[in-house]
Image (tube, rainbow, N blue to C red; front, side):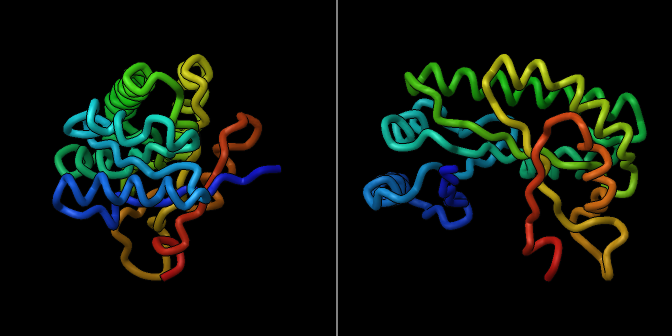
Length: 196
């Protein structure tokens, strides 16, 4: 089994555009990076065509992470999330994720070949989440992801029942595993958020 190497490059992204382009070139030139983590707020980038130029012919295993946009929405909408106990908040998140998938499809059209393989989703909202709501959302979204040939992955972050205060306080790892049982969605653990 070939496990791709994915770099969370956005956390180290320089300010200047020329330096950003150099970073993408350098990551590709090393020959060991299969993809990068792309932050999604309300779009894949302020300039999607520029991003397409950076990815074209270089990467085929990128990950789009929904965490920046999820946290942005939660700042003004505490019931927003795929695991929301509030049905309207859950539906707002579902609509937003459908927009994310559309934006990835558009990115692939601009690039000329698929570059994103995975989408990291989260069991938001903080302190208002239920495993049954998360499972329902993922089941409802399964066809959308399959049609776009994208693999949904739940990223476990800090949970509301952790040993201390967390920044995200989403569902516990046990609750996420329960929600994912039998539906074919993958799970990844953010050790920095979960352990430290």
